[in-house]
Length: 114
Image (tube, rainbow, N blue to C red; front, side, top):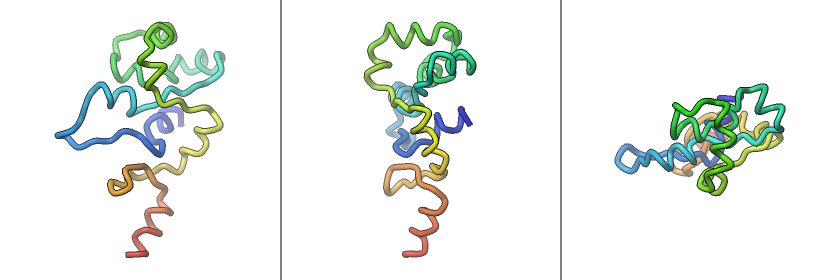
């Protein structure tokens, strides 16, 4: 679930090949899962997943310091709390027209209206 919610939230960054930007994709294409300190420790700091996407060679135990020391990560990260993450479970499909993730039910309703 932790990996899923960090990549499947409503306003995730998606782009076509011609417009894709690796920096924006790294920072906005996954979340900073803002867990309590014990939650970060239990998950091996996976909450700093956006930094991992940018530079996967940073060891997990250095991710919190990297986050603190680089304003870019704090300023541009998509913050996601545990409570907010529960709402991402239904973000299943990318709707290119709306530029957001939608649920299967929302997708089905849209198709029925056509």
